[in-house]
Length: 173
Image (cartoon, rainbow, N blue to C red; front, side, top):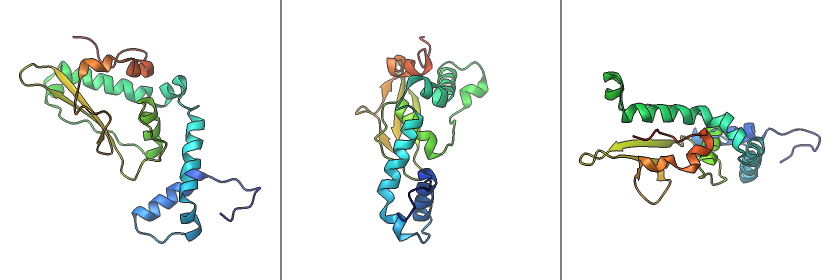
């Protein structure tokens, strides 16, 4: 890449520049463009190293509060205590790509590829009109996490979610 051996390299910064240039159709350095896959791979490796390759404690610190907030929002949506909670149709959180990776790791869906520009994790909550059972659909960048379109909310008592929160995502009703 033309960087001397005794110089440190910030792969996150390099990748951010490469991706921003591509997304905004800016001229880019041909040398960096040739090393894009290497820079991405090193960025992913560096972040996974910081996350201690998915250690429970590190993931709890990085995404535990977000998962707790999601749990609280789902609980309030399923059993609203005020007209404002009942009327709420959307809750939106924004983050950077570097925040999505720990979320994907915690959900067991990280594919070791840097999230594309404007990637998103979407969690949708539905109530069946007749049975009144609640369902959840989760997707990443428009792709479902599982083969089923929607999963019953009661499945979110799963060990996967409990692992990151220390308790179920929603309380039993």
